[in-house]
Image 1: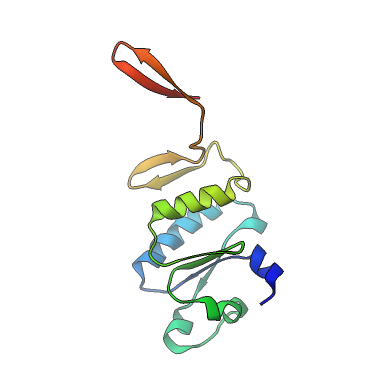
Image 2: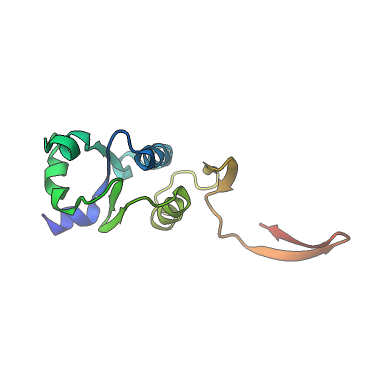
Amino acid sequence: MDREFFMKARVLFVIDGCDHCRIWKTFIEKFNMNLPINKRIIMLDCSRYHDFGIIEHPLIRAYRKHLGSYPTLFFEGQKVEGTNTSIELLAFMRSYCKDDVLLPDRLYTILDGKFIPFNFERECEHKRTWLGKRVVCQ
C-alpha cells in the first residue's frame, strides 16, 4: 500500500447488523456535516466482504490485510478499531479535526441526551457568589 495514500486516508469500515457499527456510522454522519467536502470520512459497508469474501470497493482491497474487527476507522495514519464508546470516538475526532471543522463555535454533539460544545478547552475562572464558588467559562 502506498504510504502517502495511507497517511491521508479517512475511511470507516462497517458491517450491517452490528450495533457498534451503527453507533459509529451515525456519529460519523453527523460529524461529516461539519467538515469540508475534501476532509470528510468515507464510510464503506464491508458486509459482503466479511460474510462471503466479495470485494466491492478498491479501498476494501487496499485495507483488507488490516481489517480485523468492525468498526474500523483509518484516519490519517491512525487505526481505531473495535468497540470503543462514542465518548472515546468524540475525543479522538475532536483532537484530530479541530482545525478542519467549519463552525466550531456552533458545533454541538448529542451524547446521552446532553449537548456538549465542540470547543471544550475554554478559559475558565472561579467566581465567589453567595451560593459558594462557581466556575464561569468565557
